[in-house]
Image (cartoon, rainbow, N blue to C red; front, side, top):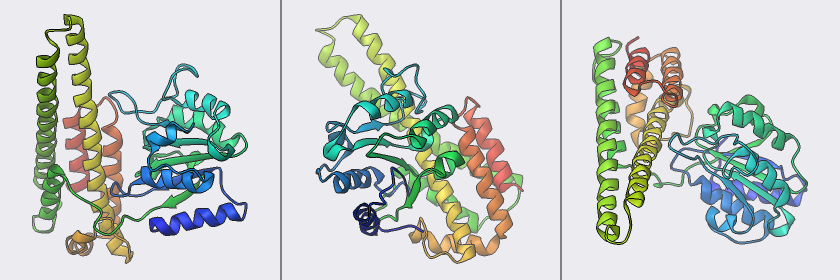
Length: 331
């Protein structure tokens, strides 16, 4: 059952007072929930230190892992000196102590751990040092292995009223999804039209990111070209290219999250759930809930989750989208 932030914090406070504070929590919620801020508040409550963000907590000894590199993955790592990896976390959680004598670790976007990293992390979950607090943050808890989820206390958070703001590209996607209530359903042509619209949004997104990054790069060139050699320029070009792709993948994930949230709301409407991820679109998702059977909605959700997983592999993006949308919407 999802909780408002204040209620969730009160539950953690109560658990600590009763000596029942767990050593690991899975903090979940839609993208509109600020899980990082919540994690900072949890560490403040538990340790009595006060920091409002994870960067500040990292200066206090907390080990913060985030997705790395162009692939936006959290990896096992080659060895314990490989910063930002699970092996680094395993070593540092034993060596570093934060305020109140706690050993603190936070994994942001925990679903970005590959299976190898998740299996390696199990050792820390099963045998943590005394006074350890591990916080796993994710909007996609279903991407974590059952063995991970069985060893943590899951705490689902509700977004604050009016907290969700949609980007230009998210607004375009929502407009496309509204067409599902009026157009013909269950045909290959409908599925391909949806795929074309979605891919067009992704292409616009990539172009906008590329234009923004290259504009910033041009300003840097003007500033540094008189004082640095060609080596710096080549290295910076490679960094910009990698940053464009990393940003694109991150924002593509956000669009997939929105698509899944929309379809999830259709399923919630069918079972009469009180909470919706996108309450402002309740009328539209309710119309689809009447139009589709629960079995059809479940199939669509399962297929879209598979599509999301395939997009994190080396498969062609266009091919993955075509197959995924045909299977989800072409019957």
